[in-house]
Structure formats: C-alpha cells, structure tokens
Length: 461
Image (tube, rainbow, N blue to C red; front, top):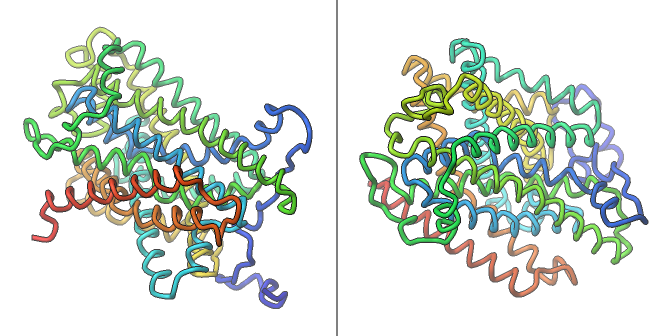
C-alpha cells in the first residue's frame, strides 16, 4: 500500500489499513535471542492470557454453574473436551499469525470472494456482539450486586468501559497483558477457595471427566434445560469464535526474525506453551464453576434463575449450608466483575482485528467500541425495561448467546483448519496429518451437535 493511503488526514474517521494486524503493537515486544527456555517463555507469555479470558467470561459462569446444579458432575467431560479442542484451535491460530504474519480475518479476506468475505464477516460480528452481550450482563449484574444500584443504571455504566481500555492502551501492550493476568489469578483464587469450602465428591469429579452418552440427551429434568442444550452452551462459552481471530493477531506482537526458520519454530513452540498454560488455568476455573454449582446447588437448580440468585444462595445456609456467608457472595460478585472487564478488553481488540481484516479499513477504537457496545446494550436494555430488571431474563439472554456462539464456531473453525493444513499456504509449517484430521473431526462433531440442537429447538417450524 502506498504512502498516500497511509498518510490520510487524521480527521478522517475511516482509514485504510496497512498490511500488519494491530499495527500499533505488531512486533513491538522484544524477545531475548539467548537465555534459558523459561526466560524466553516469560517474554512470550501474555497473548495466551488475553485468549484465556474469553474462556472464562460471564457466559461460562451461567452455563457451567447451571450445568452443575442441574446435572451434578455429568458435564465435566464437556468442559475437558472443549478445553482440548480450544488448545488445538488456538495453536493453529497462533501459528497462522506467526508464520504468515496475517490474522485469521486477513487470511480469510485475502483468500475468499467478496460474497464469502462479507458473509463470514457478518457471522463473526454477530458472534462478537453475542460475546459482548454476556459481558454487559455480567458486568452490570456484578455492579448491581456489589453496590445495590438498579440494573438499568449499571447497564448504562458498562458503556463507559471503553474509557478504561483507551487509558490502558496508552500504557503499552505488555501492561495490558499484566493486568489481564492479575484478574485471571483473582478469579482463580476466589474459585479455589469456593471449591475447597464446598467439599465436592472428588471421586465423582474424576469419574465424570470420562465422556458419557447422557451429555447429548435431549430429555430435560424438572423443566430444566436438557443436557445437549447445556453441552452446546458450554462449548460455545468455552471455545469462543472471536478468540481465533484475536490469537492470530496478538501472536504477532513479539519481535522475531521471520527469515530465520529456527527462530520461527522457536516462536511457535513458545506461543504454544504460553497458550496451553493459560488455557489449562481456564480449564480449572471452568471446572470449578461447574463443581461449585454441583456441590452447593445440586437439587436447587430451579431456584437459581440467575446471578442474583447465585449471589443470594452463597449467603443462604438453607442452600449453601454451613459455609454460607456475605464474604463468599461478595467474592463471587468481585470475580464476576473481573471476568466481565477482562472480556471487555479482548472483545474490543478483536472488533478492530475483524473489521480491518475482512473489510480492509479501520475506525478509531473509541468509535468501534461505542458502536459494538451500543449494539450489545440495546437488547439488554429492552429486556431490562420489559421485565423490570429481572435478572433471570438476563441470564436466559446469556444462555441464548452461548448457544449461538456454538452455532457460529464452525464458520471460524473451517477456514482456520483449512489454511493451517495447506502446504501451499503454510509450507513446512502446515499441520501434521493427526492435527489436521483431529481438527476436521472436531468440526464435523460440533456441526452435528448444532444441527441436532437446532432441530430440537424447532427453530424452523
């Protein structure tokens, strides 16, 4: 792209992009060429944390806790399988960014016709809005629980998180990674504490990590969501479509010599370690969400319509038993707020990535955030006004968004698996046969689950 395009006047709201994804931070972080493995891994650590927060956003909380309350430890196997799929897909996404120096949106936009490019962009934007809705609801309810403010007020307050992100960006990308890691550790500590206090059945936990046919049952119990709906919700909440675009971009923030094959291979290895370590933490957090739901609330699922009821239940000895206390409920709300803010940071970055990659132009981050958050807030406000701030309706909205994310995921998986498995595109870095076919098997399995789910919901009748 010539310089005349790059140097458009600053007053223009829409600017054509250069070739680099997130150009202002691309290749901005130095990596030591020598030194121990752990020193180099530390330099590469960070992108994995930003990816992992999408695997523990407020949407996960609703589906995992309700899954435990409704079906005890049965759905732990779904969390395990989802986490393994996530590790595989994020490895592919990060490798695509490092090898091709393109994010997934750029790779897709550059290799599809106009119709395909716009169709995939629309699907990806809808998935991002669905993710944002969960963040709005989770953050708004957390503020309402902590400070007693009306839900309508806290929904509006979530619109101002764009100011937080803009301030963080001025401190540098490494600082954002550090803040996100701190919030992840906060959530981890809270749920380790809750899990220990809940005294779960550890033998039952281990046994239920083995997949069972009942996880795909369409039979509901006592009017609760059936297992396949919660399975799809957990998959959609765990393997987030927008994370594939995010990781393929932020894996390029490290400065490496792409003309040196040994350095590229080392970068892929370190990226994979970073990603898998952080996703393992996300796996433990998601497991603990379901375990706490099963250990404390099994048999009370019908009483837990939403976050507010969960908050109250942690302070109710008739439900949570002897461990119930205001401290537990407050910790729960704080962790929920941390989860929502974490996801806000990554959602905003992803919005910029997909717009630049698919449409080949960018708008200022503040305007992008206002548009995205405005679209997400609208249905939340409508429901809040119609139902008088009823949190149960908000949680039903979150569950619906997670199921939609499960349906949207294959549309991001297919191009990612295809690109990273192509020798023509990736050369010597193309996926090995077992990685390629494992990816396609996961794609087919998830597509079948979605078809069964949609058929069961009678969406077309």
